Structures are given as C-alpha cells and as structure tokens.
Length: 282
Image (cartoon, rainbow, N blue to C red; front, side):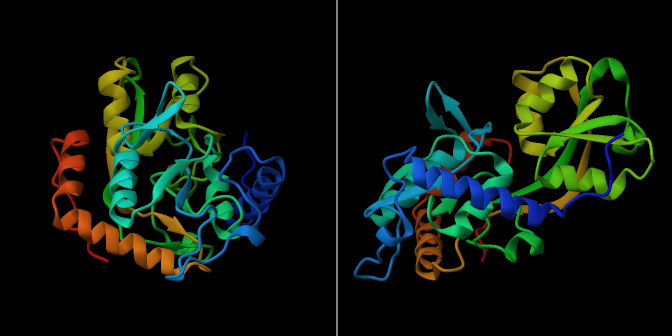
C-alpha cells in the first residue's frame, strides 16, 4: 500500500525544485541558463534570465498543450508563447523537459527559468510560492481506464491501484476523494508513463486533465476511454516569480493584445476546435 503520511507536496516540491534549479545553473544545461547575478533588469524594469529571451520551463509531455516533435517543443502552449514573445519583441527558449513537480520551485528561485508554462492549474497553495498570469484555459479532471474494465464512475476506483502525474491536481483529487484504505496511488514523472503503466496492467486507471485525456483516448490509447469527466472548474496560468512583477504585467499585457488581435483565438481553435476560447479575464 502507498503510505498516506508523507512530506507535504508543496514543501517537497520546493526542496526538490530548488536542488534541481541549483544543479542546472551549475551545469549550464542550456545556453540561456545563467546565474542570478547575471539576471539584470532592462531599461523598462524587465528581469530576464537571458537578455531578450523568455526562458520557459515545461515537462513537454502533455499534448495537445505541449509535446516534443523530434527534439523541439510543439503544441498550443508553444504557439501561444510564440505569439506572446512576438508581441513583446522577445525570443522564446524552452529548457530541456523538466519534472513537472519541480518547475514551480524553479520559477520561484529565479535562476533557471523566467516562466513555467506546463498546464498549471491555478491554486491557492501554488500561489503561496509563485504568481500566476491571467488564466488562459478552463479545464476539468477526468479518469481514464481500459474499456474492457467496465468502470462507470471515478468512485468505482475507490480501493483500487490508480495513477497520476506527481504534483498534479489529478493526484490531489485521488488523495482527497478516494478514501478506501485499499486505494493505492502510484505517482509518475510523466502522464505518458502513467498511461503506459495502465496499458501494462500495473494500475487500473489514470487521473489527469480532461482535454488531454480526450486527446489521448482519441489518438493514442484507443482501447481506453474516459470513465468520467469530473467538474473541478480549474484554470491554467503561466507561472512567474513573485520577485518579477514587471514580467507578470508584460505577459498579461501580451495576452490581452493577442486576444484583441485574434491571434489567441486562432491558435486556440486550431488545437481545440470543439471548445469556445476563454475570455482571458484577469
């Protein structure tokens, strides 16, 4: 059984993330990673890891939001960030794929990445660590299982072995709602690892965001289905350090601009043709 008494998720993520951030800064894994001493504000007060570049952290494993095409990021969030960068006159640079549950702590540290853009649900707990820009996507949770299992609802998984990506609101939902002592939650670095474990019979189901679940069962895991969509009313936001309010303001300005000129809606409709674009209300 998975133990239910453990280090609080936020504290663990902070500890691990800071260690990762320090390690990456020392090893120089990317040309845009510099020490905090080299992070200087521009004339307009904008602080960036590398001058003229938005350095972005993501797990790059959450299609259609973000994934690797060869060795390059692709997807909705990439194109959104390209539009934001174009409006601000900045290049964008994605770091090598990060562990999801370390990204926010790395953003907070301010030494490796300027922004975390990885389908982060805005929560009060996360806002204790970092700031979020204007929400850019509305989402719910979903539970995915093999069709042959015959599950009818998320609560049918109570007492079963299930999976979720570590540090996600899907994992939080399991911990908060599946109360049977026999429930075991296995956490994975990537949602794709959890789905592979489900296909191999190691776990019964995977809890993760509904738009990604819909994409996965339609294109890749066609023997699986969405057992239930869970109305959680989540919103995604771009994560930025609390020490960089000017960058937050600039990103929000750019989001308003690309919404106004139609770029955001065009990108959104390309990836989510059956959904209405959000209003981008702060």
